[in-house]
Image 1 (cartoon, rainbow, N blue to C red):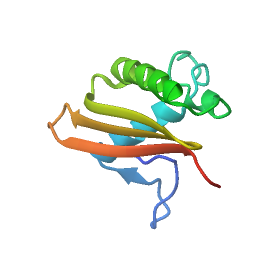
Image 2: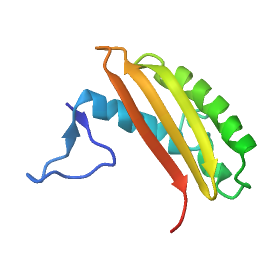
Image 3: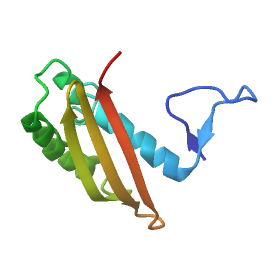
Length: 120
């Protein structure tokens, strides 16, 4: 078992844990929403999406983020997952990341959507 993210306690008042596929999803989420330079001793960890919150949302921004996110996934999580499909779209005030990958440990296909922005 692995620590669940974000850190919290379960119904037994113990540190919450999760299985491997959810742990990998949590690692992807952390990678997407961490800014480079935010982690001690890992200055290049992250995608930089948080820095783009106030940038004008556009297809060019989505394409740039898709390119940098592909590289970050390969660099930081390339030993646990194999990216099958990565699509970053920009709609109004929302950036949407749709990611499909294979878990290297057992070959299971996973698909997740992550969003930033949008109506409050």
